[in-house]
Image 1 (cartoon, rainbow, N blue to C red):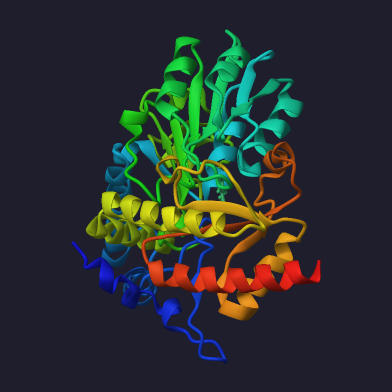
Image 2 (cartoon, helix red, strand yellow):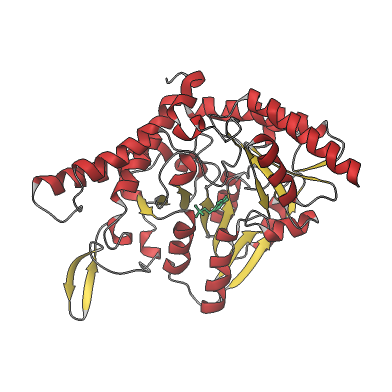
Length: 408
Ligand SMILES: Cc1ncc(COP(=O)(O)O)c(C=O)c1O
C-alpha cells in the first residue's frame, strides 16, 4: 500500500507554482487525470530501451516489446476482472463505443436503447449508425436525483432491441447507474449491454463479471495513464456478433487476394501497429492504482465530495445539480452561480486561486437541456486532491460570489 499522504509527490504537475507562487489545484479530473512519475518513466523506458514493434519480429528486442505489451494487457484485464483475450486496446472510450457501433452485424429493424444522460460519445455513434443502417434509437429518461429510470428503460426495450448502451457514472452529476440491474433487464429481452465506464473504472472497483455486461469501455488518460490508449472489454463468446470495422495487418491469420481469415481475440480488433507505449503506461497506471487501493480511492473521493457539497450548499448564490447525498455520487459536482456564466466562474477560480475546473456542457448537451441550463461548472476529484485544497476553493468561491452578487 502506497502512503496516500505522500501520493502528491509522485505527480510532477502538482509541484508547479504559478507566477504568484500559488500551487495548482487540479479539480478537472473527469476530463483527464494528472500522470504519476511511474507512468511517465514506464513510457520513457519503452522508447529508450526496447522501442520495437510488437507481434512481428523474431529478434530479441521485438520479443521483449511484445512480452511487455501482452503483459500490460493481462495487468489491465485483471484490473476489471476479465481475461486478456477479452480486452481490446483502443484509443479511448469514444473509440471503444464506435468499434461496437460499427462492428455489430446490424439487422434491419434492430433497436438501440441509450439514455438522455449520456456523454456525446455514447450518443452520437448510435445516431450515426441508426441513420446509416435504419435502426431505431430511443433514450431512457432519468429520474431524480439523476439516474437512468429503470421503468422508462424497460418501456423502451423491446424484443427488437439489439443493444442497450448506458454510462456507469454520469460525467455531469456523478451519479451511478445500477448497471447490473440494467444488464439483467436487457438480457431478459435478448439484448446486449454496453457500459460506458469512462467515469467509473478510474474511481472505484469495477468487475465486469459482477456487472454482467457484454461490452465495457474506458480511457487510460482518466486513470493516470497516457492519452491515446483505452480499453474495450468484449465478453467471451459474443465476438462473432461483430465484424471488425477496420482492417489491416495483425488482425488476420491468413490472407488471399479475395479473402482472409480473422485472427483470434483480441487481436482481430487491433489492426495495425498498436499504441505500445500507451499500453505499457496504462499497465503502470493500473499497478499504481492497485497499490493505493481502489476502495481507498472511492472513500477518499466520497469524503472530498461530501465536503464540496457542504461548501456549495453553504453559498446562497449557488445551485448544485444532482443528489445531495455524497453516497450517491462519485467525485463529480456540477453547479452554477445563479445568473452567472459558467465560463466566468471558471476563469475567476483560475485567476484568483489557480483552481482548474471545467465549464460548459461537458459533452452532455441534452442532459443540460433537461436540467434547464445551458452550461455548468464542474469540479471533479481524484486520489491526490485534499481537504486543504477544498478550503482554498471555499475561500475563492465565496469571494467570487461576494463580488458578482454585489455587481448584480
Ligand atoms: C462518461 C464519459 N463517456 C465518454 C467519454 C469520452 O472519453 P474520451 O474522450 O477519453 O474518449 C467521457 C469523457 O469525458 C466521459 O466522461
